[in-house]
Length: 154
Image (cartoon, helix red, strand yellow):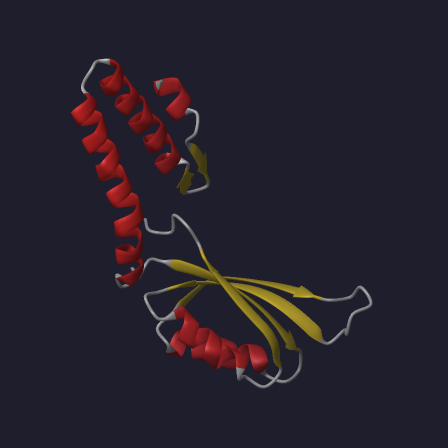
């Protein structure tokens, strides 16, 4: 059982994935062994506690304030030559975010040659939705999207 659960844990760069899945596999095995040993009450209580944690704590965690180490990844497309990147970076830092990484890609495959796509990795505890709303209003910015990066707390 340990090998099955342990085989679900993957480490990529500094992010650990599959730890929760492995824990659920081990929990399922423990519940099965308890039920098989005739400890039905223990198996039912542990199963109920598991569902309480999974379904009740998830909305609670979503309401907690973000860690200052939490990273978010933004993708922006903007028109080059209008100062949009300068304003975007100023807004991000003005809202308390640290720009941890910036990747730029200029479109040269038949699209408008003045359109640039960038990926920003931001670190901070600010509100990302408010940041997105402000970035969409920047002159020259065409699109903005975001995703929180899992496993970003050191």
